[in-house]
Length: 103
Image (cartoon, rainbow, N blue to C red; front, side):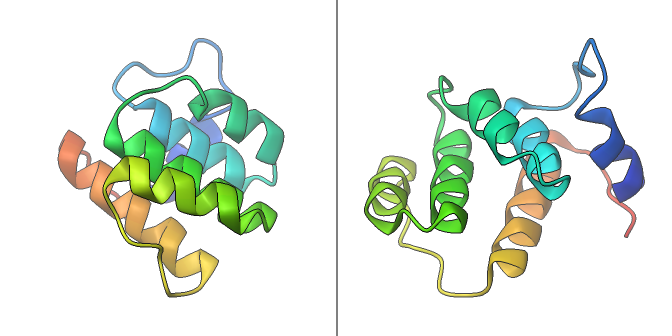
């Protein structure tokens, strides 16, 4: 899958089943749809979703809330740029799902 396909898939209805809520949220975020991204992830309970939730609050500038979600994900706060964190989360989730992303 090309990265452009991933990004465009986030706004399609129904959302492609092979993609996770985490990838949907990350795709929406990349399209500057922060509220929609947050909505897509906020009720999910898995560790990856918590990591994406942390990233979204970090991006928002709500560091206290971000740190809460990093703890829920079992992770330390990300120290790099927001772009680096976004890429790391996409790569990690795609690897977990067995989805190959071409950049």
